[in-house]
Image (cartoon, rainbow over all chains, first blue to last red; front, side, top):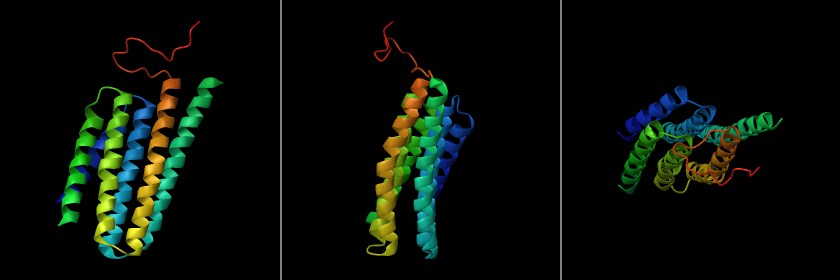
Length: 81
Length: 103
């Protein structure tokens, strides 16, 4: 039952990522959506008793952080030049 | 029982944060709602999953993911807010800007 509430909240966050007025809204919404997806992945791994998805969740968390930092540094440097 | 209560509380936090992320008028207030989703929703749910399967490889890696999210989420939000300020995204109903460089 609580998973449906998480699905609805993830869909609303995806709606904000689609209709964001600026770039920063899209980046924040996608970062939040990736965090929700990490929780989905660990819950699914515990449900089906498969340890492989846990490593995938850790790697996806670190990659979302690196991607957000890369986008922000790229935009700042593009403005300053 | 405790795990179910924590999961429902985290689901309510995630729904409140999503409504805030959709309804807030400004970027700098939407970062607040995104932090509510990340900390109150995802980290609390992962703590509930850690309690439910204690002590296991699942609980260990859930704790690693919680620590990673606590380290990376404020840094990412700060970096993207810095980029948004440099790109001249002003807050709504701004009266006086103290960070502006005096000519």
